[in-house]
Length: 508
Image 1 (tube, helix red, strand yellow):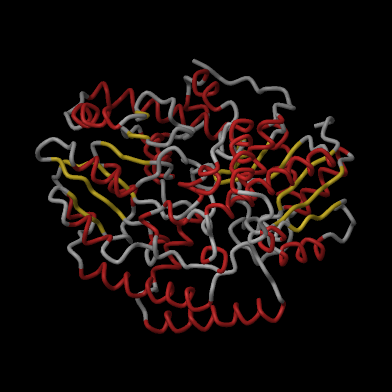
Image 2: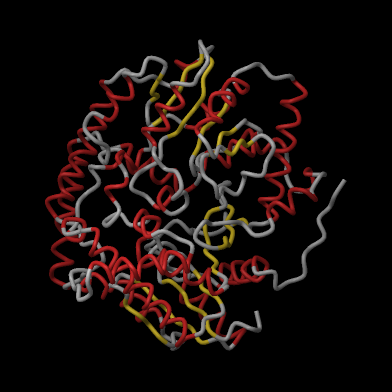
């Protein structure tokens, strides 16, 4: 990475243990100037405390835009004219940017209307959002002109982060983010705001002898992704009144701390809304127990299509699939196009409980050919027996692809869309004939081809990733990254940028 004279790193709270040690590695190996940005003042202070060797050259606090949101000096005509010019220049609509923001774009998500309100969401207005979009784009243009970054590490959701990504894309600045590869403890450096895995399709086409990379028996041992397991454990006790009280007390302490430290973020969730949200999680957990939902074993012998709900508002929808993310519309569309005798099975995402409209679940359950399963059920168990899995951007889509399960993909940017058994849908008119084909019995030969393609995909995914099973990467309260963690991720970063010689893949 000899050309990387300037590197911008997003100081994201996720994997906060990594950023400063990685910056030290980048500076020592490349002599790069390191520029950190963050939208959270507390993260800025954390980074300062971690930077004992003076590796950080500049630190930029982006929370300033919260205070500028109400400041409008231009006319409606000038604001909209500038916004349209930016849309054309960066080939991205303002509404695409707003969808990535839980505060300014919450109204786009009808399935998440009970997401907690914040000071910013309460004062959100369309003209103000257009105006702040213009200001943020202008900021990033100036920031890139001054610092001339050769690489950006990290992608942030929200209006500030998405704007950074689109300006970088227009200027040809590579963006890499370290995320879970959606297979066990594997990580990869993905490209851009759509989290694309570089070179994945090429690897898939080259690999024929997948047994060089995987043991077919390991597929039977697949389990919840590590972070998904953390979410499962977190929500498992939410039906307890004692847990409810503890959560409320914890949130009170957090708000008092933020007030005392005068910490202001882009959102600033309101205390009363936070407490109401905690109660709704408790209430809806109990309500789900009373509704007519089934355990996974109740699906035995049934023909069904499986759709796992996504949390909303959430970057997995708004950022990764701005073109389509209407979940309630999708449920109706699927249910209205299923052949006789086939059900649509739906599972709620645990993180979404408490965010849904009050009648959300009862509305879904009134659809005659829909079955809801308990949110504690393991999604992969239901996917294995389904005729097909439907996803927008869910990690289950990747798991289904690996297992050779037919998948219907509504997200245009999913890494697995190129697979023969993944069916990318770009029009509602494609749904009925596609469901009709997938609900018919397929031959053993067709199943065999899908399984082999799935294992080739897994081999390509593993060869594009790095196993971090040795690392306690899921913890935020841990020591900074070890030398091994930094070396493994640094080497893989070089590989993702194409700056090391491509390894020779073993082909049949």
